[in-house]
Length: 456
Image 1 (cartoon, helix red, strand yellow):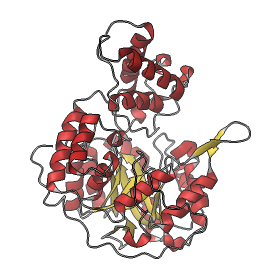
Image 2: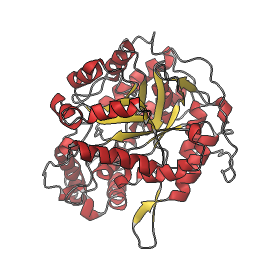
Image 3: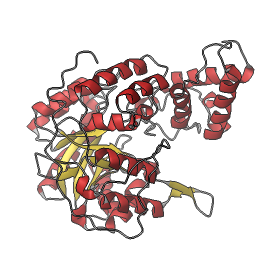
Image 4: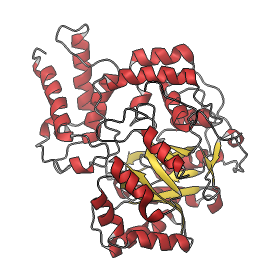
């Protein structure tokens, strides 16, 4: 990220405005401890939230948006996983009471349960107090119009609404042919445009993962005036998105040229930017001692003027409260702070991270492997500086034990990397274009060396 100009990047919207939010009974008192264990102050009220205005429709949106991909889960009486609706309601109530008004879900999130849980929580609030976004998640087909329409109508039923505030063509970018098969040739895009004209879709846009030529093609397609576009933007991806993605700087600049506002996903890059190496965190703390690595990343994502919302999947109350402290109000990243983030980026792109964002699009694995959790455990060890390079490394025994015990605790043996047969069914599903079988082999080889005490 050398010599990045922030003439446009460092512009922000005007002063935060006020929003009316009901004072809800049952909300937890202000948390005074951060997710990292540090002492914090009061949680700001709704009057402190930063808002941005969609220039296309005039919607006034909280800069912090609620990503509903990872709602809290628990075991039911039968020992089966299910969404903890009580906690979902509590988090939703607290978010709305503190000024958050944008909620993003999809039919495929959380094994297909997210829309229903989100709908139950939001239905308890006035319809004009929130914006709800969901997606045309037809990545896996079939692509006939009737099937796609059923998915759309089911989203309305699950969310218990008569109209959708924001509706997205989901995860566009694999190829132009894929875009046409999923949305154009079957008439689904024409159907969505007609639904927008009828008022049942208020804002029509798309989310992007993939190739630059596809992004350019869809952005200009039929001269459609898109109301928004959802892109992956964070300080690592600004100019270092990797071989299979597109730099966020390019995506953002092209959207600005077309006057299409941006909604941001992956501001923490699957949580990795909240768990940076110790050397990187030391650099950050030297400038802003009280700030977490996550706060740095969120501020970065929220700084560009044409960003109208930054999504965060907040499973725990302390994460929601910490993010409220970041965005209510949000301080833009300065040039000096951006220089620090450039140095942090250099550390990150030279590391051993597997570029997984734990989105779970690769799941389920036909052989039962928990792909996201395998990669998450490996990446945590990279973040903590506990990935061993030699058998003679200092604290070898301690680090070896920590990796193996942590691996077995976070991923059951039958779901670990050594069960991968490299069927490659997961590869085309990954929005980060990770070669999952090869990375599985890398994790398994590392774990096997530790288990057998083989020399590195």
